[in-house]
Length: 247
Image (cartoon, rainbow, N blue to C red; front, side, top):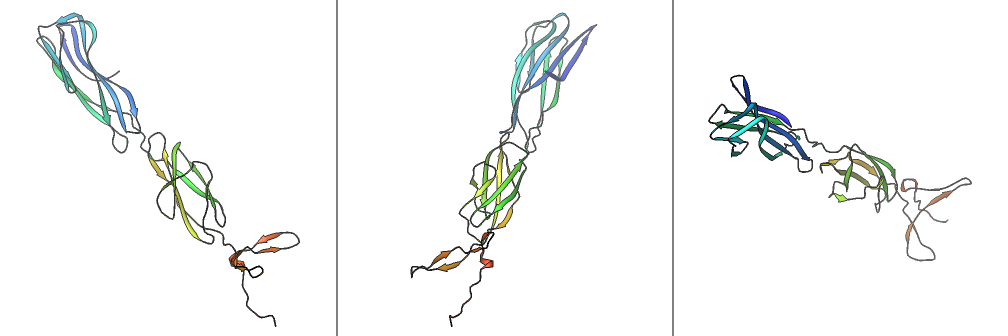
């Protein structure tokens, strides 16, 4: 344990002390809190020390003492305390104690305990477009943290849970349409969300020719240009309807 305060007393050639110590038991990153143990002890530099009555305190607890303590250090009280950290992950706590006896030892001591910082940083997430088609879009993402949840939103709408597969594929989009897409992830260690950049994209324009076969209902048709070396589907921007007559 780490000593953080003491009240020392000299009696002749002997030294006595009331000593306060602490140790970190655990840190809960998700709930942003630490548990510490504080301890009070009496140090005796002579063969023994005795008094007719004695009491002491540690933090928020008062307690009685035995009438005799022998050479060395004897623990007289121990407590576990939960300390909540601030939004930056920092925390400190002042812990005091006192001792009051009928002989030699009477006084106060205390000190501030500074706890190790808890990580409250959001994950960093970067999103990039991989491929854009008429009705689908695929994105890659990278992050500096381990994530346990992932959500996405289209056109700044509501967040929706999505698979953590990488890449991410969106389906059932409309062709020749502008969209925005963004994701966010929850960091596994502290359950804090972090959002990616927003990608603006436009789906590929499909063809819009209307075709009727043998007098049936007109339907959308895909138009291709065939050459000796390739067959290429053309987009709306490449397609032009020319009206005319057969004369």
